Length: 154
Image (cartoon, rainbow, N blue to C red):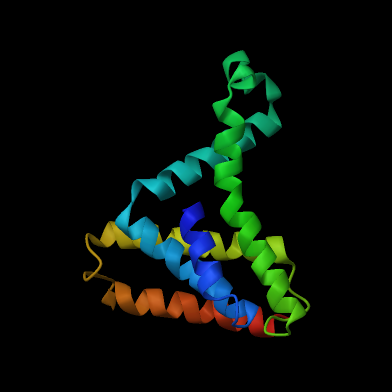
């Protein structure tokens, strides 16, 4: 996902920040639809981090000594940091409301995208519908609502 984010940002570098942010969200939804276990791994990662934060006794010695745990953390955090940075770029170029807090908006957008991925997975395929709503319509609405929120927050 990190490479996809880098590519999306590079392809939108000459456009307003909001275009890059929406492209990242769209890329994340596409990636998760093509790789459905990724959203599960992401949620499992958040559960692990939350449980470690609440009780650091759950951070095993093996995890503390592992060369891989910090790498996994950095890998999972990278898309969030990039998205927040692009939101700030959008605030700076006035394509995103100055009242938006970049990391809060990042987490909100990612939770909306993960929700879409979960519903999409429950529908059985990208062309199926759930509650008589086509996944393509839900995807389009999700992206449009994110855009509107970023543009006019507050």
